Image (cartoon, rainbow, N blue to C red; front, side, top):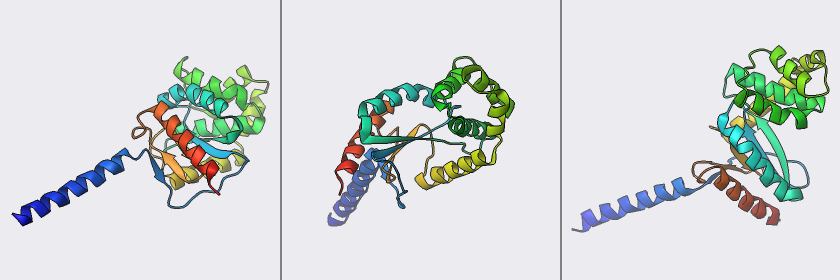
Length: 205
């Protein structure tokens, strides 16, 4: 009788360990990433082409505004190897370089998911920028195709790999944690977990 009981106890321990691992709403990075700014860095991994990111954007913005100076928000566009998403990543960094990101960020989501527009060429993105922001189409196109923007996209891809991002939206905190939206119970749960990690990171010596 002792042997079957021992096997049962071992199986129960394995199941409990697996359940605990599944319940963990975030992972700890093996190699912490450097961060900047005065607040705790909260890094959103997203793509303009992701409908879930479109839904998450207003929630994340309201949450970030409520967190105030406790956090330093950084947006990181992902590509997952898709050429179409790489163009959208270039669009983000081009708008940042041109100083029009506050205007174009929401407009890109709206154009794709509400208006059904498709951005297949840099010229398509430049046309939207010229429509919604105070920038000439030629200047927007030059920025999108520029070397500096390409370098920013490549740096973002290295960060995606370093954090182990497998889906979007995803949130990294303090350069040490990546929150799993499913394990967190959804997008709102992800923000609640992020807030707890921000508090923990802020209290750390």
